Image (cartoon, rainbow, N blue to C red; front, top):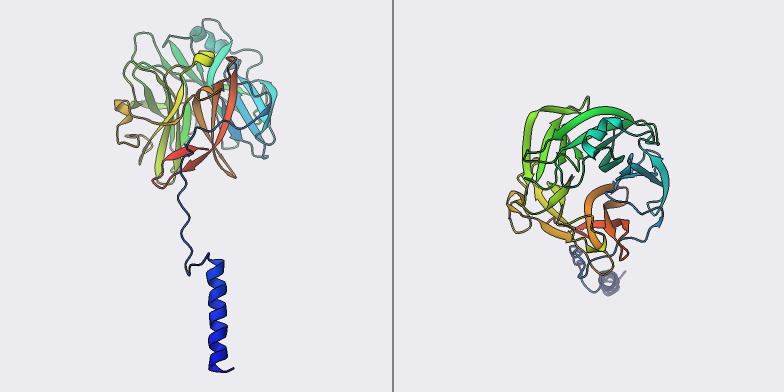
Length: 330
């Protein structure tokens, strides 16, 4: 091959590379994801998706199990994360050990589902509106099916005149196998205690404060790790008022699972800080009580919201993270 032929061949090859790269020898790096300009609507779901205070886990068989507030705690199942089917109650025969906190009501609140050591673990609340005479209990099940749950005992309780409220539990198991329960509503805000991994019940007397807004509403914490940070998701403002609800979903982060947590502006969550992720818009009212589902195709924010009619509905949105590591939903 002559030198001129070689030069032509090299030039053609270079042109093909430039064309494939959009006219540049080196392709531009992809832009960091960013939050959408307008708040996203929840995914369109089918079946029995009228739930309040949802918690959702991926089952070992690939399906999904959901629990939510209701009589005896209510269950839903799904094969595809889109269509949900009623699956009975956790305690179809009632839970008499809770009635001292519920004034005899069968309704139990704000369950938290997870799967550890071959069993489903369910932390849940017993209380009444406006009272901090409340308790968090644990139940476990090998299958998650209605009626299969075994009562494991009282985890933590709060009493009238105290400065915290034992509702809205969330279990976090760290990389070293330590168990923490984060919980709380109103009063002095969000608390965290240590649990014994063997029993799932409380270990020691230490209680750490993670977030507060003074006399203003904060509740429903959910702790999760992503990358180098621990994210504390919470709800601000008024729940349970139907279409008049002002609930909104907030987040802060820390390099430690027990804080201190701060928002995007650096305001500590113990001083009222929190970065808004999702608030009411259009026909989506009071989106809150967040949980995070880590699925095979990414992370999802799971929450409830109210329709214009005032009825509660399950909300699910994918979670993204911007260049600074702050989450958003889309």
